[in-house]
Amino acid sequence: MESKLFGEADDDWIESVTGIDTKRRLWNTYTIDDSIVPSPSFKDRFDQISRVFHLEKEAGRRIYLNLFLADIVDREEFQGKLRIFPELEMSITKVVGGKRRKLGGKHDYTIGFGQGLDPFGQKTPPKELHLVAIEGSRNWEEQNLWQCVAEAATIFRVRKDAKKAKCSVWGVLTNATDWIFIHIDEDGKLHRSDKFLLNLPYFRENEVFFIYRLLYHVVDQCFRACTPPGSEESLNAANHAENDDNQ
Image (tube, rainbow, N blue to C red):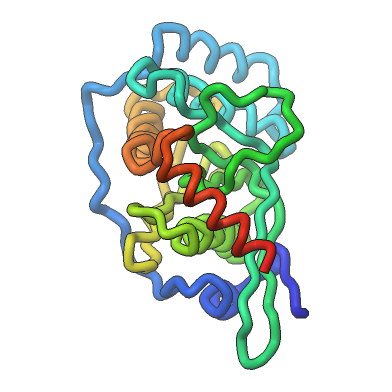
């Protein structure tokens, strides 16, 4: 079996294993809701990070990403149902030209339903619940973009194989200053946004609020598309995905 990690896969490999159409298209159909603002404590925490963390290394920059994600996922409209899953492992296989190909690895973060899950539990959350793949990288190269696409495409394929009603997936590639958002639509077509800039370590409200609102849009779409865990459809889809993995 031929195997590639997310960070090794190019567009041809991703397309052959996941079935998505990797032709680049501009994603600009998102909705920016000007009424969405961060929590009252967000700016203070942002400023604190800027004062105390050195930003040269990737780990330092991810502190900002953690802030954005936690503040958004914890909003009351998501009813405490969403969770952020760091370093979730996922893989898929497909027969291509008579050979089995595998694509997999660890997502830096995924977002999906996780209400009631033991936060220290060893059991991997059902893979079909996840809709957002987030990759944090300090230095950007073309391969970093394809890594994020590979992560999102893997989630798309898992949802498709699980016969989910909605299979659209979103991805975020960021080094905390530069942000690119990707979207894989219901037809498996890849779309990517323009690159957006956040001038760290300064809190420029127009920049911060734009990124916050766009990331909120992605999380909100995830919330609307997910099947709540515990439902009959969710359990059946999870069992289907597990059976497919074992074949």
